[in-house]
Amino acid sequence: MAGHSSTRAKLLGQLLALATLLLLTFYPAPAAAYVDPSTGDPTAGQVLRPFKAPEHRWSAGHRGVDLALDVGAEVRASEFGVVTFAGSVAGKPVISIDHPDGLRTTYQPVHARVRAGDAVVEGQVIGTLGHPVDGYPGLHWGVLTGKDTYMNPLLLLDMPVIRLKPLNVL
Image 1 (cartoon, rainbow, N blue to C red):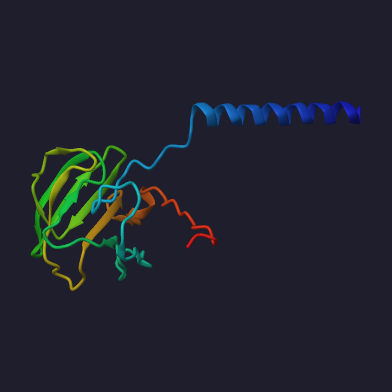
Image 2: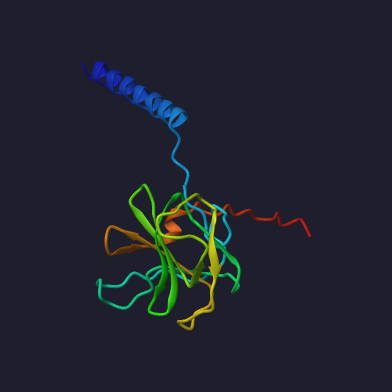
């Protein structure tokens, strides 16, 4: 009997491995759908200031990332969506875009080339970077999940590929 159950377990393990292989072959892991709004690339460019989740909703933190970008440079939509806001908030030019996956991305300080209600596609120029109004340079890119929960936007991007140079190459 013991040999019979070990054969059954071995066969079950082989079937599970085959099913996993078939799933990975026909249903590969989805690639990140978002792009860096400062470059249009699927991986992050230079991050000047990282995301820092607040301890509580009302606490201090950095609810996005600041990406290196020169004043006047083009800012791109990080994914397909609909512009929900393009205007000024407390003197700062801001654009917000709602995406089909339920996320909302925000871009500031950005002078809009789009209007509320416009559909945008990934990588489309939505505006130009304005002068910093908070003492920090670059593009502030934020992502909301739900009404008021912020997440690290870099999690929406692909991980960079790191290649090491061989030691014997000068």
